[in-house]
Length: 128
Image (cartoon, rainbow, N blue to C red):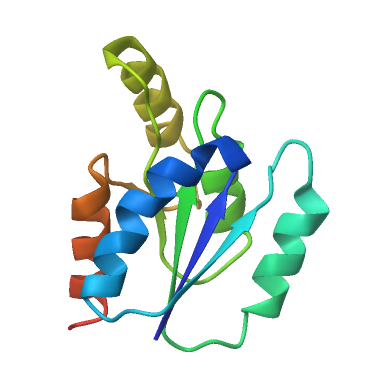
């Protein structure tokens, strides 16, 4: 059982910590990476390739604006992908949510807005 968090930018660290705090409470192991699907697609693929043989794994993607990261991860992995977009205010929230919800076919990304609910969704998917 493992969670791999991929952030599109190091500026997403604060948002990630709101998720990892709860993963720690649930005693769910996690690792964290910074890799933009737009700027570092090969690094994202490397992360996915390094984890492809994990049996119980969930990806959490944290990216805003033009969120290619969530779809890129979902399209290149068979593991569940939870997108938990960061936002600074209501306008930013709407842009980031819409970007995370609008995925092409065959890229199943589950969008969870609240960081605590994201961690709880992981716990429930793992059956914990």
